[in-house]
Image (cartoon, rainbow, N blue to C red):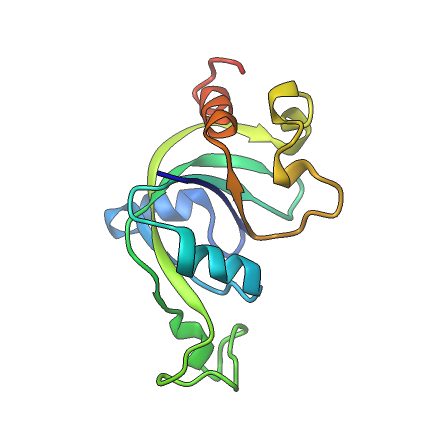
Length: 156
């Protein structure tokens, strides 16, 4: 089992949107970074833990706990000419971009980025490194466990 931090703009798909979706599950779409795509395609597996992170907006931070509930499949938005995520080089025969399904597992206390920065156990977390902008990044089991405790209001 692996662990991931997955960023979503809350005005695009928020953790509340996932909780309200049928089966509390959404397709993770719109990833247009090759490294993040490769994580989804080559490293993620059903059952992996996810820290659902709200990026952008006024207050970035971990909004909830989720899990990967599907294997990789072509991201439909790449084929939709009306989509912001359209990729004219992608075809159904040769897709370039991947989706996975993500299911909300647990809502809890929102943990702001500023608070994450104060937790010594998270000092080497990819999210907290200067210049880190990946929408999907691996998280160690210890980092995941620490943040889950914060989400559950139990401290680090």
